[in-house]
Image (cartoon, rainbow, N blue to C red; front, side):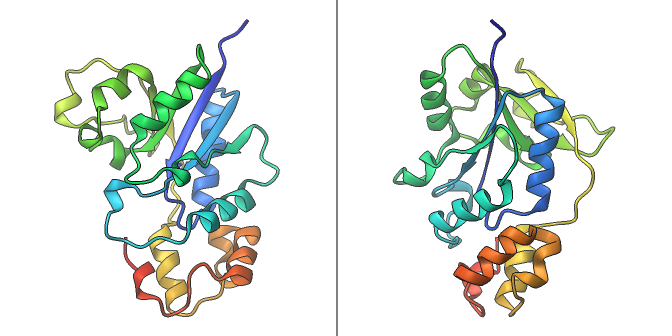
Length: 209
């Protein structure tokens, strides 16, 4: 039997938007994945100090974004975990549950450039192939501490998308409706934002980060 290829794509998804969707589709195609698992973060240690929308809302918005996408699923284990979220804990669990698969961890060049700050990063390098999204023609650049450490890495040439969750939150805090931001988040996420109000207008907590 062929080895099952599974991709992992984590993030706060606060809110999820069309650049996230484009990255997921690119990963499915370029890596020939059998499945892509989206991992909304519970309390990511890198974002300590910034209040996020409730995990249930972020997962629901992500489900709205991914509706109809084949072989893309949402794994909410990090939302249920207490304390800071560490990728290594999730990867250990997943690999124990699905032994023998070939695992790809999808991340951007900014995350790859500071990967040596992640908990147990040498173990992660042994367990995963890193798929680094960046501009076409620009090879992934590791941090200095990883430059001499053998690891598997592939490049994902992602077309430029000028969409940032922090900008979306700022616009919502300033009074924008979800419908007005549909070109950035898609109509399903926009509808969820307007119906459920996970970002109260005028809430400065969601403007930064």
